[in-house]
Image 1 (spheres, rainbow, N blue to C red):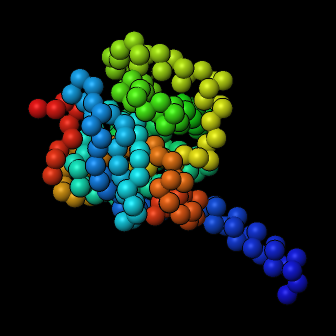
Image 2: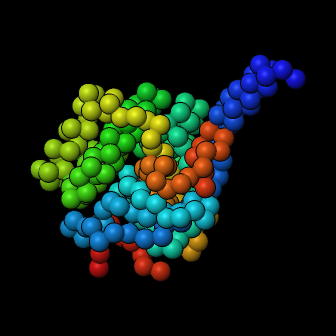
Length: 224
């Protein structure tokens, strides 16, 4: 077989891998930071996927709960995966199916770029974790009341010049497969797990298919 033929076969194989939908993974919340505002935990959260080392993530979902040590079935989506899978994410799924109900791929892509930008700002400004995470939560919950600092971050995230500056390849979306309730969570919960934004590189997550794989304290929105 010629070198050119081998190259073409390798390229086709790579394309086939990149066209495969991201598959189900076991996600575990391994811990939370001490950051909190008004009794609410904020970024960073710490996750493991398929037994990987823990890595830093940002929750984008204010209304659901998880337990430290809890596992659930989820999917790690790259930004490129949204083209085929946007309705499986928290942003794209219908309200009846546990999602936010954004009605188009374009709207979902924009929302996640805004969230990626906010996570990048946390990475650069960890001292602003509380305000940045509340701004992120407001992306999916317009009725959420946030303070002036969070409002400033929210408004910055909504600027196309900011969210379009993000290298979307640097971020993944870790979405629970059951968005409606806690089915499949261990220990069993009545709430769907949260959805998270993460950066794959520091976590050592591996590229597989079109997703990024390998890539009991109850965390409630109000601390007792």
